[in-house]
Length: 441
Image 1 (cartoon, helix red, strand yellow):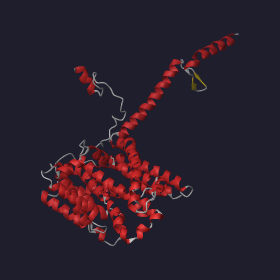
Image 2 (spheres, rainbow, N blue to C red):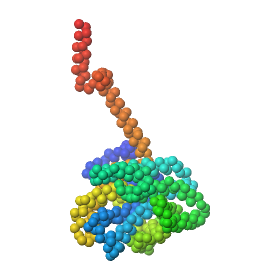
Image 3 (tube, rainbow, N blue to C red):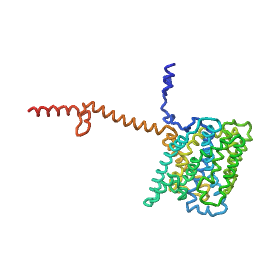
Image 4 (cartoon, rainbow, N blue to C red):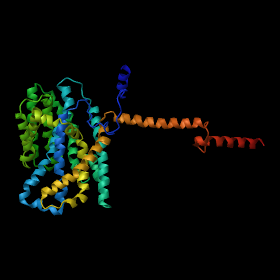
């Protein structure tokens, strides 16, 4: 038993356990890696809601640009359809709130709980190594795909890719035609830069006064979108209130609370989500959206059924892959439309929309999950740069060792600067002996 325990600790299976090769994918790890080591499945469940809403909204974009459905943009009875599709785009604001919640955690532990001081260099390096490799690679993939689609007319693609890589596309060209969804990632980067300053809110004492100050900051920042300065709309300013909602719910420790008995919280959660995505029409003030979004989060954490749904394993796992889904879904939705458009044979918009959705979901799922497993999840390991460097160094060292072994096997013989293969050693010995006899004569 002691030997069995040692084997298990080293990562080997116990002796009595039979290895099953029936499912080669069973060892693939899908759960996201967190810096603190604490995984909150409810938050990934909220990410699932956000990315699902975004994909549902973006699925309609190729149809709306198709001349066959151009009447939809100008036909008044279908105003509700366009409003509904636009409201699905509020998944982006939900992402902003979740980002605020996640970024608030280390500063909350430092300033409120008296925990370890946050190293800003580690804070920014973590985001650099975690987010940039998947982002840059996706831009290169999109750039190549758009170049192939547009043929010779692609002189502006490198500029668009470069602007997106530098997160300045919002200030020059809108939308970013290589991957239009990157505009929100540029907003997120702006918040990452100022997050340590925003976290100074946690220094306010007492707790009640700090939370009142945070609510006041949310309401004030929600008014910025009404300022008639177009340049402000290209920055974090009109979206700042949604990140602050994340700071507020982090301060309230809603994810640490237990679900309340009874279903009244679940009913309130359902009503809040319906209002946020369905009932509040485009043009609703940011203040109203912020209050509704806060209610969505709070009631979902308090309702036993809502919280259980967010914790469903496949919901939380797919939600944890939201970054890969967000980066790659447009490539499938727009790239496949040249094929899927032939299946749009109905006269009504909704039936064609459902056909497109059914045809796109499978490829989006396969591509995004594959991108997550191969690219994004390895970058979640904060030590991956060091491990990659060690791997490359070890690989180079192994090649040098093999070279030395070959030279030792051939007695160190070299011909024209090249190691002599093992099979030629005997022939070389004969050549040397023959040459020696000739010299003696």
